[in-house]
Image (tube, rainbow, N blue to C red; front, side):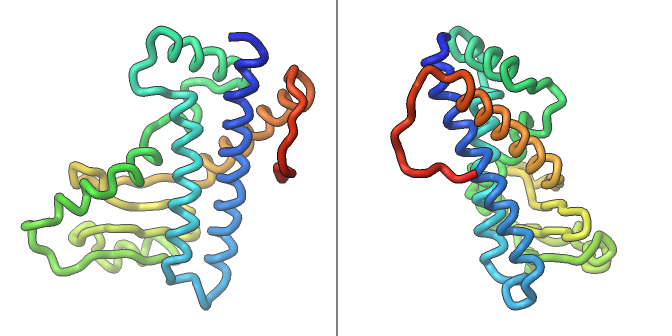
Length: 194
């Protein structure tokens, strides 16, 4: 992969990292605003954040890396200093929003009268609601910034958002720095943001 080709990938990673940071910031702002804290706006920002994180994950952790896909993965990880412990690599964020329909499919015919979709101050509130006995559509434990939902098999998913946001920010910054200093391209398009 030459620097021209590398530019195409790093430009996408910079964009999705920046998008993840913006939506994570918007999520945090929504949580502070008591008028919207328990509205769907919270979930819009969270879903957008997870979508950007998922796109980064796709470039850095393809499902079946072989041939050029494996080379691309290795080059991008090396260039950006992404190791196997990176918070962005697990497919949790990607699978959560891409397979949401499967979770709802699991509920059909299973009964249950309570579906949780709310922001909770802390884990004790989650335990107080006996959430383990209910369907968990979307729960955000604010003090930990942990998103809780169900996997497609019905098991509980807990996703720590801060490490994911930090890694998206780091990858975006590294991509942007390379683009500004190493890319052979001269870009002509609207202002990209920070």
